[in-house]
Amino acid sequence: MDWTALALTTRLALVTTGLLLVLGLPLAAWLAGTRARWRPLVEAVVALPLVLPPTVIGFYLLVLMGARGALGQTWQALTAHSLAFSFEGLVLASVIYTLPFAVQPMTVAFRSVDPRLIEAAWCLGRSRLETFALVTVPLAWPGIATAAVLSFAHTVGEFGVVLMVGGNIPGVTRTLSISIYDATQSLDYTTAGWTSAALLAFSLVVLTIVNSLQSRLVAWPKN
Image (tube, rainbow, N blue to C red; front, side, top):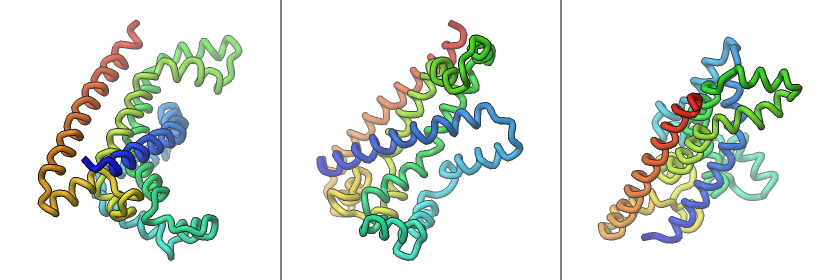
């Protein structure tokens, strides 16, 4: 097991999940409640990582974060460091690539909340923000938890995007999936096998948790 890669992957997954919960929560709430004509377009943009090859997303992100890219130049001017092939670049790529795994479960959860409960909170004098925090979010917690688990797991398993954006720098951008690839290339099947087995077990646990949370989300409105 490449423990350095494990630590880096865990850190990346935690940061990505935290950012996606902060950014995805209001976006999912808006998608769940809006009737704007351009909502389908926003939903399509959010879902793009599900259908685009990771290398395509990685290529555009690399161009954007590179020395000649707008984002890369801005980051270089502010920090004096390159955004591409850095941990910060990995975080940005992971947030974009994992966005649908966070937003879609939360959107479904918010849509499942009984609108009568929201209207009752408004009638009691609660503001929209208070109603969202005290009524909508608690009722939608299984979907929010599902989004967090899926975001973490998806980040752990990323390969194509992180390889293109971050390369393979030990301790900086080398994640577990890249470590498995390197071990296989060097014919170190023992290391590759143990790491793959660990990720397989992790994936099984994640799917079990997600299925349990989904069952609670279905049953929650009935209780």
